[in-house]
Image (cartoon, rainbow over all chains, first blue to last red; front, side, top):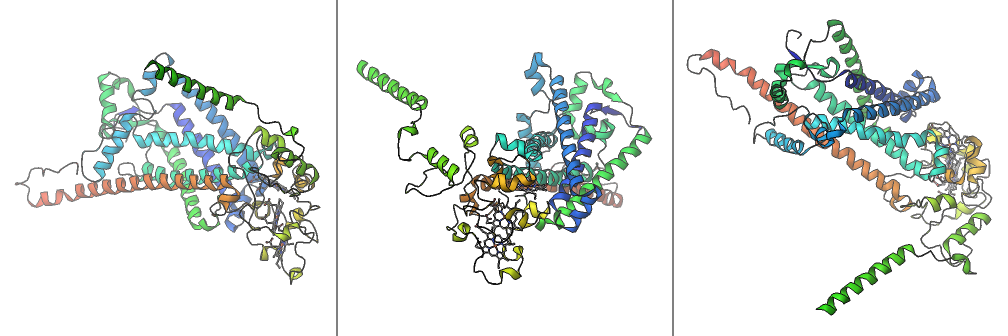
Length: 276
Length: 251
């Protein structure tokens, strides 16, 4: 793997954010599911790992606050990255994650390609599903935060809103969490691990770099753009060291197993899950 | 011609003025009336005395549930929660002993008869017993005037035993949540009902779209790869004829 030419794709901030969201998301998923299924033996078992119902709640709340802080830092980071002098170009160029007309076109081309009616779309730096992954988390996190904070402090919340709003917030919190888990554990995992060429694991989010030749096929426009602008040379980086690869393989597969275990739990205990 | 333009302008201005007046006009002052046809005063009287439906006038658009007046006034609820709007008036709800005359009541447990009421997080997760909120025998109906769970004193008599400083607004939280998907909930708790549908459609839509997308995609890629793998075999059998079979890359 390391004898290939590799170019940089994610900087250190992106990677740290990703690891951060992985860890916090899984903790929230485990403590949340444990409490949701507390009436079952599985729920009791999981909750007891965190020192009982109260312990699991404390962990859930604390990590929730951590996630909010992380999200605020991320917003600051994103705002700092935009070049405000030429904000229109900065927001809507091909290096930006903002959804653009091209994404709709790509989706149409992809669907046509699915049914053998045309060539596959030629992607630039971000494909539309990668953008969706990003924005799904970007709106899921605030939704969970906005619904979660009042539930954390129901008394204070009832001063600024009628108490019955909490009933509705519980519903949103659970349903959104369920959607996030199902999306990550089914679709994100499939795209990251199971696609051909990706198996056993798409390493770019951990290594931060991708193989140039592979990317020429997957994202031809991006590579072409880099070449045209003469930035390809400076994008070339050495591959990840061996010990680092071992580490993130262990880490990634642990997360994968936890996620699939939770997915299995959701399926097995689906009759006990009440999102209202 | 000229007259028509003028007229149109006048009508337009009048309409705009009327609209502005309607928006900016101060609301009718309820205190001018002796008899309570006013919703707010009616509600406040109910709140302070605990006597309900003493008047022939039914409350108009306002929910028959006691809320916190300031809270409601400051934060108008779009789809207010109206408990039991869909349910028949329940006589036992106003009785001192809601189980008076029910046979074998003493021999059975609460959750045997109240199956749905037993499924709420205070009991299943918070490990509370029914009696911690509903009190000892006789268990009063919710709307019995002296019931501790009567909305006028629920916050002070029950909730604040554990939630220190609970106010009326807090006590409007529904301990026994209705089933969000149940059609009856549309009448009793519309916002919960519609939120449920919204999230349901969001989840099903997202998963259906991206699930299918991923499935077809992974399937197609493996299919292509399988074809790739099969390709060299016929080549090996007849190498001279076909140098490189023109594989339609995209189909």
